[in-house]
Amino acid sequence: MSIESELIARLTITFSPSRLEVVNESHKHAGHGGDDGSGESHFAVLIRADALAAMSRVARHRAVQKALGDLNQRIHALALDIG
Image (cartoon, rainbow, N blue to C red; front, side):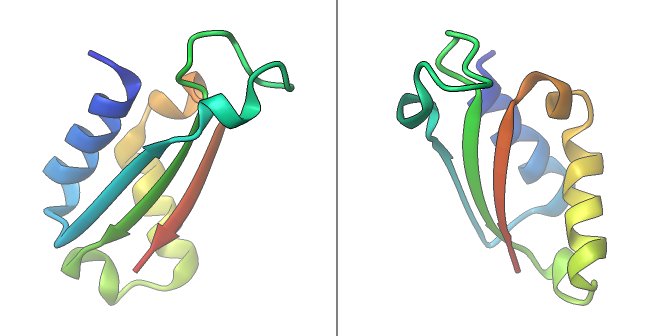
């Protein structure tokens, strides 16, 4: 399974989002630091979920990072837009 598919699956299972966009931005970073050549090193995530709405900004980020688990070690950069 691709990292992008894993991101979508884990976030969907954990938060049942009303909106989820996962964009692979690795092509923008080809040859830069953190580019491992896999084409799956840099991602941007936009997520909206009722489960996250009542949390503070820091708590939302922690919850997403926890849901992603070991993917955090396999991705060089992850931009999060959480609401």
